[in-house]
Image (cartoon, rainbow, N blue to C red):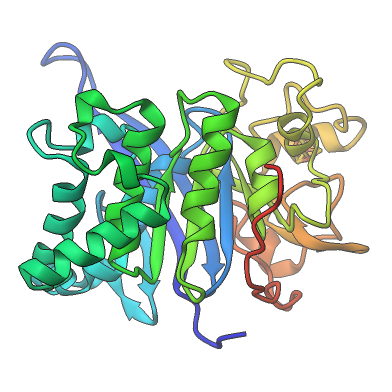
Length: 345
Ligand code: SF4
């Protein structure tokens, strides 16, 4: 495994300040991300899963510098990305690509599929006109769009629009791809095609962060899953070989489970405590008082933030109960492996 992560996030927090409706109304702070730490290595595909409002899209956008952070550090390939001037970031952006949720709004209504890819290669990839044209044809061919090169966005299906946005990103041979719900609004067959096209065509050493609601996609395509709840990372695990153990993650990954908590999230301590089946006895007070940090478990490679499941907290974690930081020492990050596209997603 490469010693250097493609993405390293330390203590990331984001606070949005919402202005009151009237000048005399006080401003309100919304803590969208709360002390997140994570690492993503070359060749790994990380699913970031959670309900709407859990902070996953905000975190993905902050990592690429599309939103500013409030606290913490972001390192991309060892460089402090959060401290870089925009002019310097611009030089590196070609390697760190974003796949938006809304493909249609990312496409120019006047450009056909080939023009989209060729222009990206010319402007960002530094290719000559003829080289960009040639590479664009090759990439669209790889993504099954050989017959649709002259199609305008309004003439394409939703799946084809997504594949054109993927072709633009993949043609640049990125080292990091952050895909924000790239299959939302598609039927299951199109979803499988889009994920196969994205993950199956990543450069071998590229890292990918896939923001998704789709638990089946996380299991089928990802080497890691990170579960977010109310701005916290509450669990990380390998979805190919393990089942989640946090009670909230279990609900999230079980399509037959009871409805997920919506408005009942607690504002202090563990946000899941109002619905948690594990809270009883002395845990009632513990879970009300503090949010647990991510801890390793026996017989489980991942880490989980739960007072009922984790090993006893260390003195350092007790001293700073608001931090969600992982507590060293812990298991090494899971070995990166080449992605093998599944036959069925
Ligand atoms: S910390 Fe407490 S409330 Fe939260 S999941 Fe664990 S037992 Fe349940």
